[in-house]
Length: 402
Image 1: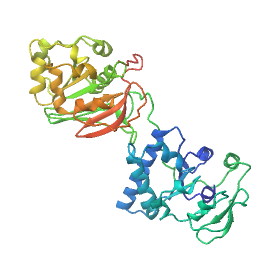
Image 2 (image 1 turned 45 degrees about the horizontal axis):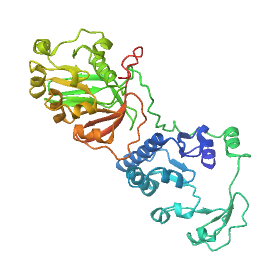
Image 3 (image 1 turned 45 degrees about the vertical axis):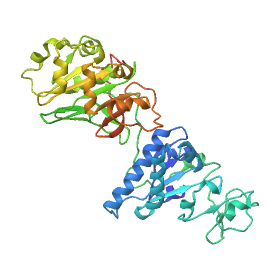
Image 4 (image 1 turned 120 degrees about the vertical axis):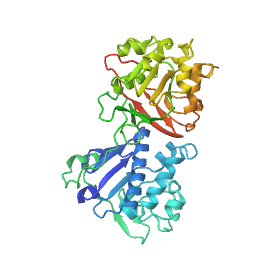
């Protein structure tokens, strides 16, 4: 509230719900909002890197407020979720130099790691029944008799009393009518369960040397994330039943604007409203088309009696790429099937993935990748890079989830 009174900072908060309604607050993440919390920490880490690379004296100061530091720390395993701990450590250490400050409350002094305690600026010690808590900050005075709101400042032993703007934090926020912050504070947003096809970033760009298939929105920045295919490369859309495989191919077909053909009679052809091509006539279907996407749903069920699909995968014409959707269990057992050769490209989309599914694309997923079980939620993999995404909904009327 003191910062809000000044109107000079943009504020972001973790686990301090009452401040969410303040105009200075850009992003608030609650105890159960792990996705938003992770996205906020990533954004702050990236923002600090940007400010260090290109110093800007006009940049608005940022304050990150965390109520009970031990809560988020316990929510993210330091071994399996090491990245978020590393990023927060950089925010704490490198942020103040570029105008990014962190203010935290702790229930126990031990919740503040030694490396953080060594670089902390101001420490206010409130009432505690354990004098050992104060001794961790070299404070020997007794704090047990302090009334609520009274604190001792560790640096010089001075006693201070925290200002209250109302009977509660929520009441103070509701009554607050202070100055507005400069500009609008950044909101990291939320990766929603349904992203409409008309999202501004959706599109397919085909050329003889490289293709960009953008039908998914990235968790990192809520912008479109492209599946990139270079000459001779193909992609797999891998997922269990009702994970959104058919919808993903349908979104690619729609975004390609006529530069795609559907192979095999199945749900994809019906959803796209097209007469599919059969593998036996595939050569003539792509003859003279130029850059083209060949889309195959339930690929392990599509036979290739003439070898046309196998030949297209191993030696495609310039600008031609195969994108095939498969179930992971069936792909693992499809020895000698033409679709298994697509794995060589190591590119694709894993929908609602099991940790072992990344092996099908020659990659690796984090041991603790907790994705919600939503159709279209998964990861794009390519060049050993993984990005969490939500695939756009190709057809709101169809609501395909296969």
